[in-house]
Image 1 (tube, one colour):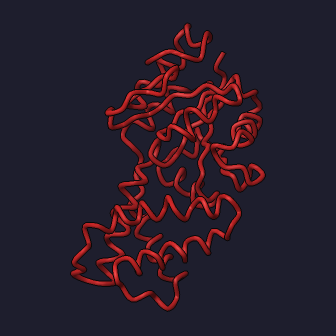
Image 2 (cartoon, rainbow, N blue to C red):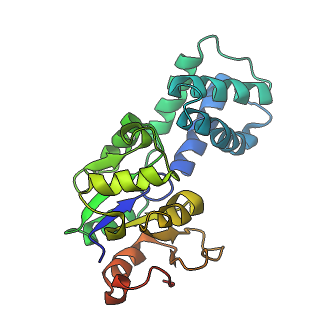
Length: 239
């Protein structure tokens, strides 16, 4: 029986990609007006995020250092003069990013419809920033439990310890918890190794679900899925 639900944050509750794309485009425009490759900035920044953020999560460098490395690589690729103070420059990007934070339209309703269950957020971002995001989109009331690898002993998704630790933080076993998120490895197949159930949120609706796992294209479809009587049965199935 499902007694708790964990939500991924970026790409699930909050439009991280939209905010990051807007922020890096704004930052580059301010730093180097009329840059000829401005339209390439969001895709490059996303690629660098995927390359450098795992370095911090693996303990290879500090959060601040991976940010410096990422911004430095961004400037090198676009042939932009590297700021003398990378920390200050990244803070400028972060400010643009914060201004662009927005919840997906289906987020609040889905969370509200699951009241009565133990609810939380399991995310791979930095603890302070992720807590700030949940507050900014107005979900800090029902989603008081925000968990990252920083408070889970250094264990980030898809480490099994991230899922077992998150379930324990809700006062539940992994088998009593469902995780919903947009990343197949981190939010869908990863939790299964611990007995935790999962649902893939595929907002674009263009790919088949991993075999044996439900797929939804909107969070509005999550509450009926969680509460359906058959959910107490096998983990596999389709939504």
